[in-house]
Amino acid sequence: MAAMEWTEKLVLGLAPMDQTHVEFVDAYNRLLSVSGDELLAEMDAFIAHTVAHFDQENRWMEQIGFPACHKAEHDRVLAVCQDVRKRMERGDAALGRQLIRELPVWFDNHVATMDAALSSYIESIGFDTETGEILRPQEDDCADGASSCCSPPASSGEATCGAPASAADSQPA
Image 1 (cartoon, rainbow, N blue to C red):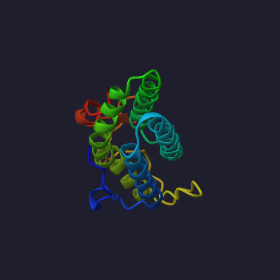
Image 2 (image 1 turned 30 degrees about the vertical axis):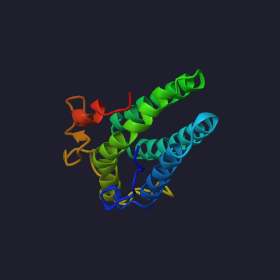
Image 3 (image 1 turned 180 degrees about the vertical axis):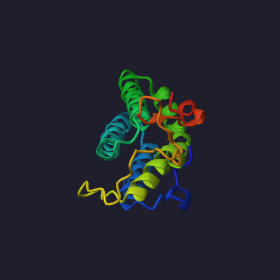
Image 4 (image 1 turned 120 degrees about the vertical axis):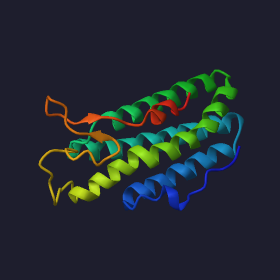
């Protein structure tokens, strides 16, 4: 399996998000360099990073009223990682290696779609990720439909999710 590379296509321009993504790539690459019991320990470290990574983005989304489709994908991927880790502990190293093979495809797609939409929206409203302050509030979150994760508000007045089908299809198995 090839290591993940941090490339310009992964840079979104939101420094705290980009830094967390660099750390994700590093954590992933450590998974590639170990086996046996060391693999379980690195999987634990990877999952711990992923929990913190997703919690960070989920907090931002909650603070700005961003659609929950992004959080739902985080929840699904984390559940898969945790389930695979349990199976690896019971001896299914092959399933662990399969997950490791699939993560780069999921990550590239997730960054290019959902994270790019979140980063763009954060920038558009002038959200300060450190203070939680919104400098340029919008009248209706995602009302213009410009985000790839948002569609115009439904008749109920709430923003809805419309993530590309490939984002859901490429989640780790």
